[in-house]
Length: 395
Image (cartoon, rainbow, N blue to C red):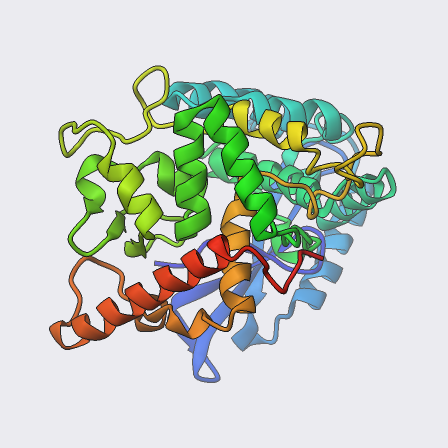
């Protein structure tokens, strides 16, 4: 079976590898040209030759242009028995509406993000037929967004949306034209969080959270002391707590790997004080009983009350910090955990990461080493957090 066509750097020229034919020890490549007849409006797609026969993408592009020029010179006639022109290729707007209705909504997914991206950034592309969305068109879109001050991550979200729409239409056999994305270089986002809390800031934040919400305080404590992401904490269940080894089992993580997180004595005690529920019950259920999607407004309110996102926290009139990498959000707690360990020279103690275990099954010969590493890591976090005179500050 032949592979699917892939765009080349020449407009209207695609290539596909053969699963049978060989050329110079590799799969032979067949080149296809794709254009619209200038006289009849019909879409033409045809194979023009194989690499083993001397065909190249550049030569195919020249043949395509000759075909287009010839179609412009033909008189407009329709002979008996001629088929009607192909149906026009759907526009990006039509494809987006179908993707939104028959994929996102049909699968119970929210559309707010996609609607916003389309409304704010794709107005110029929505009227275009899908086969006219070329690498050049996408490059121009990205250039305009960059000039307008849009972040690299926003640009990536927009191009990703267009890619998902076109691939879904292709999967549904509603579009069989070229895909322009291989020739597009996306900007690299610089979202690496740089801000981390000092022990004093962390203590103040935890105290403020505890005053406002026990649940948000405990979630923040787990992130700060164990290095967990919010999504990992939100999915924790009572059965994931192992007080004997003082670990939390993380079954679902961003990396896709299961792992164990070390509990400090503070976290272990706080969890032990919680009322007991069934092993499958969520530790921190949302109001509807499901998994929480994001931290509640309690967290940013506590941060604002302490002035942690102001240039001068002690001055209520101080200007806010605008660099997202320097602002305190829930993920700052996880970054703080990692930064503290690195500053204390304790990063080599994360033996579970070095072992790279991806399930609950761990080689028995490493168990005693893991216990030592867990205890040392927990002690490192506790000593930093409870040190009244730390010799490092957040830059």
